[in-house]
Image (cartoon, rainbow, N blue to C red; front, side, top):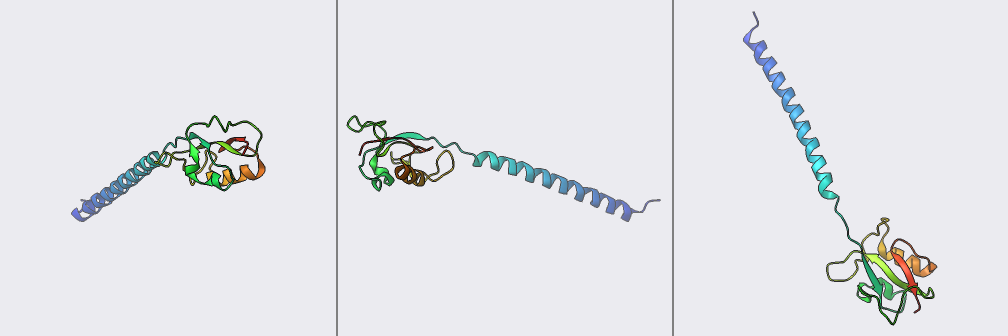
Length: 128
C-alpha cells in the first residue's frame, strides 16, 4: 500500500509545479501588456521658423504653426523654414524630442542649417 507520506509529497510536488507554471504564464502576460502600453504614438506637426539666425532656429518660441507670407519657404536656401516636430504642450515645437528617424530634432536643425540640406526634420529653407 502507498503510504500517506508518499501521497502527501506527490500532491505537494504537483501543486508546486502548477504554481510555477501559472506564475510563468502571468509574468509573460504582464510583459506583453507592458509592451503595448509603452508604444505610444507621437504626432508630428508643421512649424515655420520666424527668426533670422541659425542660433534662433534652436529656440522653440521662434516657430509658428502658420507660414509667414513675408518669409515664404522654398526660396533660396539660406536658413531653416519648415520643420516637423511634436508640440511641447505650450503651442511650440518640442526641439528636444527625437525626429521620426530617431535623431534629436535640435541636432537635425543644426545639421540642416550647416549643410543647407533637408532631412527628416527640416523640410525646406528660405531667405534670411
